[in-house]
Each structure stands twice: as C-alpha cells, then as structure tokens.
Image (tube, rainbow over the protein chains, first blue to last red):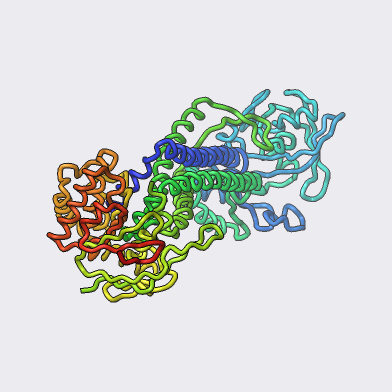
Length: 407
Length: 224
C-alpha cells in the first residue's frame, strides 16, 4: 500500500499543468459548494432570528382548536389562565421572556381612508426585548404605560396616509359579535422588512386588544429562551407543564409556525442541489477528460505493468487512488479558498434584498461543519468515480496492443 | 527437462478488414535453462511467438504448454498470476516506469508477489549487483544511459527468479558495445543462475550468443 501510494503521488504530479487544472476544478467546486451553502445558512440564520425575535418567539402555546382554526365562536378557543401559564414558565432559568398575545382582524380608518389590518395586542413590558430591537422609521415605541395607542407598519401607514400623533379608528367585532371601535393615537411607524407584515400589521397594547374584543383572555403565549439550543429540551417540558394547567394547550415551535422560513429553506435546498449537480457534472467531465488523457499517455506503461503481472483490479485501484489523491488535494485547497473568500465577503458587508423583503440584509457566509462534510463527500466521490471509469477501460486493454505504445 | 512445448501454433490478427497470419503452425520445444535465440526479419512473427509463450495473448489455434500446463486454458486472472510468478520480460524499448527509480522499478515485480519490504530490499540489492548497477539504484530511468536502462530491465526480469525470461530484441536500441555488455550480462546469468532466456533478434552477432537458434520466416519455423 505504501508503495502504491508513493507511485500514485508521483503519477499525480507527472504532468504538473494538467494536475493543477484538475485540482483547480475540484477546489473551485468545493469552494463554490461551501460558499453557497454558507450563504444559504447565513440567510436562514438571519431569517430564523427575525422569526424568533419579532414573530413567534421560540415557542407559542395556544389551544388545539385555535391552531386548527376549528369553526365556532372564537372566544371559546382562547386561553383563560394565561397568568398561571406565565407564572409557571417563569420558574425556568432558561427563560428569557414569556408574554401573552391577542390579535384582532379589523379595519383601520382615518375617516377618509379605510384599510384592513391585523392589530396585534402584545404585553409591551414582557416583550421589551423585541420592542427594543424593532426598527423605527418615525415616532416612538409603545411603552408599558401606553393604552389607546398604536404602532403601524410602514406600508400600512402609507396606505392610510397618517402621521405620528394623528388618530386612527380601529374597528372590529367583540367576541359576542358586536361591532366595536377604538380611537387610537399613532405613536410610531416601524419597519419589519417583510412586505406582508409591513403593510398589514399594527401593534397595540394587549389591554387595548382585549378591550376591542371585550375579553380578558388571550389567544396565545409567546415564549423566548436565553439560548436557541434550549428549545429542543424545553419544548417537551413546556408542553407537559402547560397541559397540566390547561389540557387544551398545544405548544408549537417557531419552525412549525413559520411557513415563510420553511419555504425559503426548501428553496435553498433545491438550489443547493441544482448547484451541486452542476458542479459535480463539471468536475466529473473535467477529471474524466484529464484522467483519460493521462491514461492514453500511459497506455504503454499499463501494458508493461500488466506484462509484469499486475492484475486488472490493481490497475483500476492504482488510477482510482490517483483520483482520490487529486480529490483530497483539491478539497484541501478548496476549503482554504472558501475560508479566505468567506472572510473577505463577510468583511466587505455586501447587501441584498431577500424575496418578500423590503429592506436590504447583509450578505454573509456562515461556515459550518455540514458544508465541509458535504463538500468532502462530493469532491472525493466525484474525483474517485471520475477516475474509476477510464481506469476500468484501461485495465481491459489488450496487453499486446498497449505494449506497442512503448516507443 | 522440457519447460515450454509449442504445438501447431497459429495466430491471426485483423488489420483493419485484412486478416494477417502472424504465426502459421509453429512447433517448438524449449528445455529449462536454455539460451534460445529466435531469428527472423521484421514481421516474421518473433514478437507474436514471445507474446504467446509469455501469456500476453491467446493463440488462434494450437497450444503452448508451460511446465505441462496449457496456457490457453488459463483465464485472464490465472494468466496474470502465471506472468507474475513464472515469466520475466525484457523489452526492446526497456519499458521502465519513468516515475520510479532503478531500485523501485526492480522492486515492482516483488511487490506484486507480496514480498516483505525486507526481502524486497535484499533481492533488489542482489539483482542490482548482478547487473553491475549498485551505484545507480536511486537514479530515475531518464538519468540512465540506454545500456544502463536495459540492465535495469534485466534486473527487473531476474529479481523474482522466474523460470523463463523472454527478451524481445533486447539489444536493438543499443550501440554495438553496449549491446555486447547487455548480452554478456544475460549469458552470465544464464550460466551462473541457470536462468532460461528466449530472446529474439535479427542480428547474427547477437544470436551467436544463444545455445540454440530457431529461424522464423513469415510465421513459419524453417530449417537453416
């Protein structure tokens, strides 16, 4: 084995130019795969932060019928014991925040212009971290003291044509089906960066939402942990504890709730696969071509080795080993290039607008072990496979014909 | 003792659509340890005959018995093992592996026999001594003269102590003086080790060193 490895190394560097070309092809593919995957990982990471911080939290608890949107009187599916649920949550040191939410679909009107909107009632004090990091275009954020106040998404504000300090009327139905209306003062305009949110969402204090719906209940409990990693173990604990207080409660994590995140993730997966296939095909064809040339040049040598008693399998093994070495070197150079380029890209702080987004987000590369493992598998398999086929043909050559090529 | 017995050996090739008869019924016996020279002009079938004796190809008709075994009955795998164990080859163009040193070229057949590194070291050193190239062990073929390369090829053929060495025009690419030196090595090995040689040539000076000669004309054996 040691001698075969030595021979393989020497053969790999027999034609330096051609070997460099093959290595560059593999390295390019490895770099491309790692960078693309790192880019996708970074985008998904940013998106998951948006989902956790501004949308669903790590976990949301609501009744089963609420999640299933079972037809019937809406208030029947609300949570009555939300104070007990919140108190139970606060006993866990992993917890960062727990708060209740109540939303209402209704109309926002200036008197002249009326648009449909979703008024999200949140506990301002308990969702302080989310509120603190919210990007404000104009005005100020709601405070725990706010009552008949509202914060509008930037596109919703543009549709209504209102300014900070002006009044809008929120019209909706109470749980008993009676039309209710509240005059709210516009305190601020926020930007979430997602088109569907910015033109539809308005934040109001939880009590205001309860006032509109004429209830003391809430529809869901939002839970955030100090660390993302805590979600896995805490999910089951919270489900168990919440069920003991209210058996109707069902806990869902942010991933289950975010249809948008999952659609972006599956888009990147498909894109990743397509890019992988293209790169694999290029590497495969490139190496088959260069190894084919190498085998053509070494036909006489193959004849000599076969005459000396080298078996067909050993000829295949020898060339495949050379292909594997090419793959290892190409992979090594590829990961170094990927690392350097990722640092440059991260440092350069390029920006782009994501699909369904309204603001630019930084383009970053998030290097992770799975990308390196995937690139290793692909580069090593591809280079080995690309060598295997031409070497199989070489091993089947007539020895006499091969020997004639020794001139 | 008869080592190789050839009976009514025929070999046909297709050259494009043209059928070429390289051997047209050769009968031959070779005794163990002989120094047999095969004489003939270009295209007479000398190389084809060596190829069939060495198990590099299958005959169209007829038989080659090596040590009593019909080579035509051996499958490709068995034929590979036969070459690895029983036959040494010396080629007109030396056919050394350019990426390996003289030592490694000679060592290669021993690697195929799964000899231990220590045994390989001993056997290669001995083979290098026998061809007088001990000081060139770590030279690559490109750093050796034609005569030295052919001596490395001889060492590579003898290193595994095969029953028979087949040498196809071993001196054709060498000048007269170097050819003489290479032949001298072969004759010496034949006498000292009883290494058997069958070699081809069209040079009468070379063939004089054979203990017996066979003459091929148009694929047939002729009597002088």
